[in-house]
Image 1 (cartoon, helix red, strand yellow):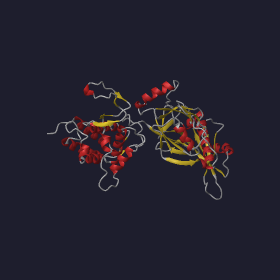
Image 2 (cartoon, helix red, strand yellow):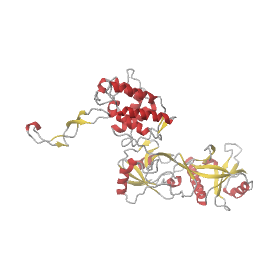
Image 3 (cartoon, one colour):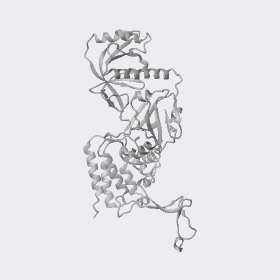
Image 4 (cartoon, one colour):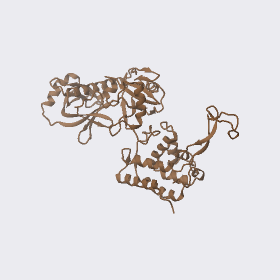
Length: 474
């Protein structure tokens, strides 16, 4: 009779809870992390230690210890010793199959083994488990283990689950249930799997070429921290990056285990190109500090006593009405209407176009206004449905109404591809404050200038002050 195993009972409960959530399981599921932790405990239970050759440590004495010599370990000579195995060590040795062709399982193992962000056996094993959940190959991995006697020897048949036939069968049944479930995981979010199953909040920040971004960086144990967002810089205007965040990728290139100055060197190579940053937030979903960051932040504080975590963009006031969507701040505005202004779209027409819209007394429409790096998006507030998109090359001017400090407007070409020339419309909006109105105009103006320079191949350089030992400004 098989022994009762509490880990299997707990794992079964975790699988049932995850199924009850319904729909594809994502990283925000409250039961995902606990299920992964239970799965990892099962895979580690009963793993035998490995007697292996450990380079760099050995016996300093020339005589054998059993003949009475005192023995000490020397860091200059090799020795034999025990190495703690992890489940990744048998996963990476699984047979690829008789045909030699890649299978979904072998592809997942290869991806985990070559992941630049996972540096340890623990990190690679955890990354594989996430790949296997999404790719539905976890049961296949355990079945292949059961058919490979030399790898089964990793487990003690008495104390383990995977090495015990009576316990392996119910475990495989549970894995087949998991295989039927759908997962939608952010597989790029793997930079902290070496330390924790707890994943940070990830944000994507895209920006157009500019002379200076305005971030001060410091390198701590291979991670690139933003220690300051410079006033009046492009980064401050875009209101995405916060002091305390980590630069995880630049244009898809990993910065995990980065050397001092690597981020600056990458930006120099990418000068004049649009940039896409993948950021890891210092702040977790509950509003507190992401726990695995605490040791890093302690070191950072020792190196820079004046460093402070930034909780919100400096440009944003407490009373302003804005919404966070996909890591971007959208303005809650009232759309007052539009009017045709003919074939001239210069800023001079705003003085007559804005009053013309106001005189109609049309019902205002609540919208979300997104000032992006290359375009302006306008969404319906209630449903977030996209109403219109205006790339900066189609916008001829933007400005504020003199008689009302919270009104602004911009002109757009209605037929930019027409051979007869464009006609222009003027769109009018009301913001919650004069400060917000000025902020929107300033951000749109910088976007229009940046895109103009980019499309006209003007020389746009990154002005970088690099302190190559620890700190740099970009």
